[in-house]
Length: 104
Image (cartoon, rainbow, N blue to C red; front, side, top):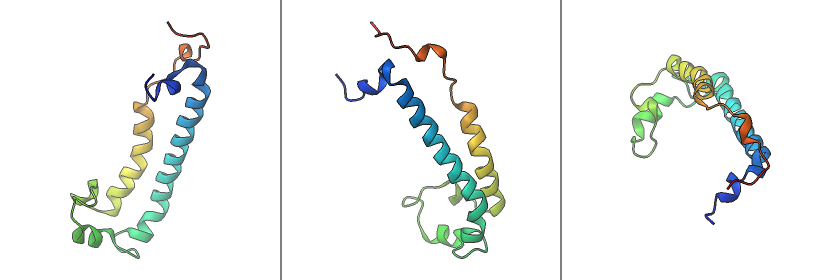
């Protein structure tokens, strides 16, 4: 039995659901925090400006979309668009995934 087969068992549908929704809630909170706090802390004129940091650190050490171009407006757009885009691309949960009968 491979190491992840236990997670794919039909009896664990509630565990998978709680885990996935909990992780989604954590990511949503993280993006909302980024929208509200990133600009004053690490924005173009924040406490530790991100453009200065990105200029000093090579892409290889800190890969980021913002190495190409950084602006506070671009960060706000990304922070507001990623959660809805992630939600839109998540496949829907079908009713047949909650079955307690063993699969053959």
